[in-house]
Amino acid sequence: MKELVRWDPFKELSSLREEIDRLFDSFFGRKSLFAEKELSFSPAIDVEETDNSFVIKAEVPGMRKDDIKVTIDEDGITISGERKKEKEEKGKTYHRMEMAYGKFKRYIPFPKEVEPDKAKAKYKEGILQIEIPKSERAKPKEVEIKVE
Image (cartoon, rainbow, N blue to C red; front, side):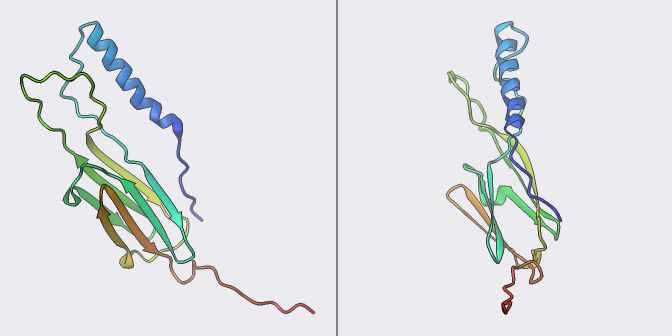
């Protein structure tokens, strides 16, 4: 049986290290603080299990639904896309740039059997929600046992 992947808070440290490296590079003149390097980001997700389905929610604000791709099979679901950075205009001075841009790809394995052909997705106000029904074999069944 497959298990859901736990959130690893230390994975976020890699992006923090990149930011610190960019600050040091800028301070010591090795390269520009706002180099054209596109950083990838990883949208936050929630995975919920109900009696009949799995519900996955992904935060992808500032994206159009056409920029998001969802692929699914019996084993898991892949959410990918790209949030494009606006071109910098001359005459602007940035004092802070915290928004993440670039390509992303998230894979979420299913711990139980699902019916991928019956999955439904909707995108509203920056939240992508996908509902994947469980197969009949994976749904909990209630069996009454007579006690003597």
